[in-house]
Image 1 (cartoon, rainbow, N blue to C red):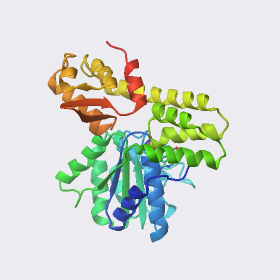
Image 2 (spheres, rainbow, N blue to C red):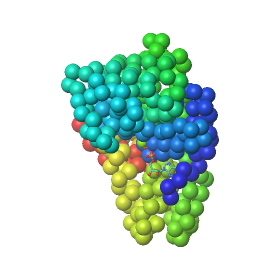
Image 3 (cartoon, rainbow, N blue to C red):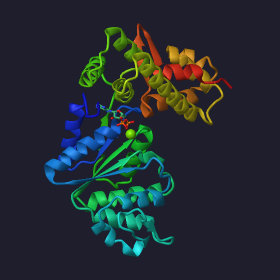
Image 4 (cartoon, rainbow, N blue to C red):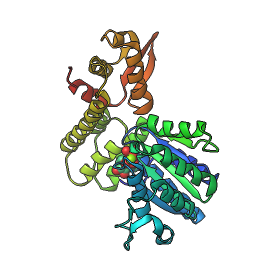
Length: 337
Ligand SMILES: Nc1ncnc2c1ncn2[C@@H]1O[C@H](COP(=O)(O)OP(=O)(O)O)[C@@H](O)[C@H]1O
Ligand SMILES: [Mg+2]
């Protein structure tokens, strides 16, 4: 159950964007399939047009230096050779690549990006790079302006930060135009059902309508959790075991993310989170005692950054609620201060 399912429109948009020389940002909630989409579409584009792809996971890179070293380790030997003056040691395979302590990381990055021929560079989870961010952006914008053979696909689970990264450089006049944004939403229910039925049929595991109902109710329709369930079933777990295991991980991850989000916020914020599990209006949320401003910032982050809360009209009321079952459960587990 691994090939890209139900994302034809997004794959085509990404490929067309690259074909018109545009850079791309793939945004959406965790487990929506951002990494999978970025990699699969870039590879397809590369195959059609004689490009190479380079994938960099920047999840653990918080500084420009770390990000640069990680990028350099994945570049072709030919490019690395030109960077000798910046590097402390070069080993075959790139494992040992380190910048000299005094070498300029942004200089090395600029030079490397300038020398890449026909390459799609996928920068995944870029939002953690905070120290040296202006130089990181500036090296990218130099490359954008000077090397038409370099295409970059950004992806990240904190859309606000990824977007801020662009809007800032854009308003500074660094980029000629903004990257195209592709937002990945959870699947429609019908697509999710089709995915599970087909995937399980391929490994000859049956699934009843009730089980299917159960899975979508507990896990929602994000590709990542559904494919984790499918994989467990294919490997021999029964329905209950597979569902419990995956649901547990989904809830734990959601809880961790909510705790991160709550860190350092108003002491009323956890109450707001709890209400969002059931759905609540603005005025109901305000009754927790949270200030208008803090509520606005919190909701904005949940809606536009993490994509886990939606705003819908029910009758004449506007109701805010977690869209994913795992977040609704996690919200109930959050401790009040
Ligand atoms: N369109 C899809 N079809 C099938 N499996 C998918 C699809 N999108 C994602 N997956 C699977 O879901 C899991 C999570 O996807 P990933 O791309 O890592 O999500 P994200 O980067 O948004 O967190 C991966 O194991 C991947 O194989
Ligand atoms: Mg990812």
